[in-house]
Length: 118
Length: 112
Image (cartoon, rainbow over all chains, first blue to last red; front, side, top):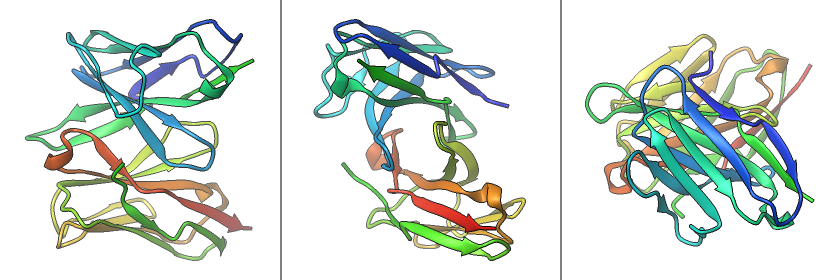
């Protein structure tokens, strides 16, 4: 079964409103989670790294005031798309690495959220 | 940003055939991961590889971590219609921190 749960799976919002997407690790703690954006038929583009208890780190070109990330607990990270515009419409996916021994990890992904801004 | 070289970009094969795809990089990776993504879903982890030379199977899937640590391949034996989807390789390397670097994906289509 899923080890990372993302909610909602799809959302339609009006331009100018904000949308919150949740990412939960279900049976393990994740001090780090990742947020990606994916355009049709393309690979995943890393937007930011969510760090529990500290500020998120954003990839170059990603507006931190536009995409607010909060990692309030060891099992929950949220991404809020503020003042959404049609160009923000996309498929957003989170992932959480589950640590094994040493530095090796398995990264599990949420189901994704299809955001449509109208 | 950095991306792995994944090939082929797409494949259209007959049901029952074996499939092979690979990823290469100019950088050394410590972990290789293979994912499958169905339309409208998040990627699902298929196989994780942690050691150079490691060969791991998961049902009809077999993946190997290249000896040079710069490449990996995924084989699917006796393909079936539900194998349709996009397959991504991903690598982790110390120089990229804990972030995954992805290939562009291989789109697999199966003729029944």
